[in-house]
Length: 410
Ligand SMILES: NC(=O)c1ccc[n+]([C@@H]2O[C@H](COP(=O)([O-])OP(=O)(O)OC[C@H]3O[C@@H](n4cnc5c(N)ncnc54)[C@H](OP(=O)(O)O)[C@@H]3O)[C@@H](O)[C@H]2O)c1
Image (cartoon, rainbow, N blue to C red; front, side, top):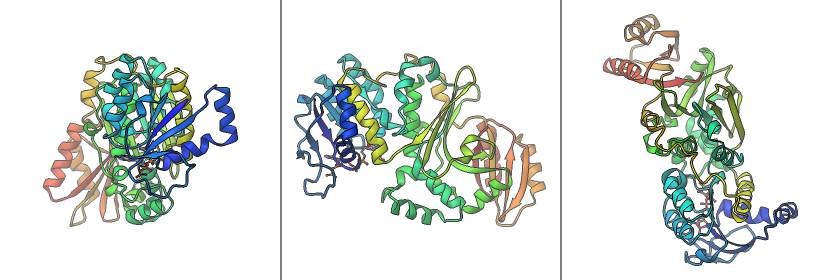
């Protein structure tokens, strides 16, 4: 089985190193797959690499002659063009590239289906937890009413560190030192990475046109120890989540920090752990959890994908046949869902929580809890549609307050 790699960075090298282990070789033999790494496309031939030697090239040709292509470049281009070329030549493609799948997945799945070849991307979301393939084969479970999760390990690590007293900048530095964050961690802190993963999940759930740039996103910058200790006083904590509520009329999406009550399962997770909860149409909750990234965890999933692609068993290559059926819901994902809200209202002159409570009640978002905390007023409101909450935020901002609004998970 001639396998051409596109990219020989952290994941590429981890894949080849892992595939050389005797126990993994035994698995490959059992699956009757004998892998030969014929080439790896890179930018810089002279970059030091610790992975096993593979013929490196800077010229992206030859992949159409391979038996399987494994794309691990990252980003939209040239990944998209190279994957298209391979699929057009009926070469099965494996990728872990969430940007590619979130932004061009529909087109690449359709191309793969037309060419009767495989397009497999199990490692693109919760890299070390193989579940996307199951969703693709199970339209009823995949057609969830709600997706809730922590899909970005870096922001989870940073949030946990801030909760324990670190500053945001200090927590990010520590994450870089430990190898959890890139030198440029904008994709993590802005929520772009999590939004791309959410889009891929929604595609599996039949919202074929869900686009990562459409979801409301709040960057991690709002995070500080005062906000988290305030959340503690109100019986919860803050976690960097994704939420997609697909039940009209309160449907909506959110990518960013959220208030998580202490009795919620997500409240007790720590560090870089990733988790996804699906609320099924029957109302039950199905949870997937495990390593969301990291070279070894990702490499395991990529190798299984290579086996699937090589043996024609496919994988999550098509959405579940609901295309179009969830168009209204997809449109609703451009605003936050109806939810309870944690509001941090900060004014130059400290405000009386009772006066803030009266003002919130007058705008139809009465607080369930309210307190003064670290120079601000913190309120946890009743569930309210975003339109009403937005109106409340505008009213406070018009009075010169700065307001942070985070949805409360239930
Ligand atoms: N890191 C993780 O934990 C993780 C987990 C799940 C999924 N993923 C995904 O896996 C993919 C690879 O991630 P990674 O961490 O291995 O990235 P990486 O270390 O930056 O490796 C990228 C590789 O692609 C090559 N490359 C990039 N652009 C290129 C271009 N225009 N032309 C030729 N070669 C190019 C690079 O060449 P040079 O080496 O010469 O620079 C490098 O070998 C990404 O899509 C990422 O999102 C990563």
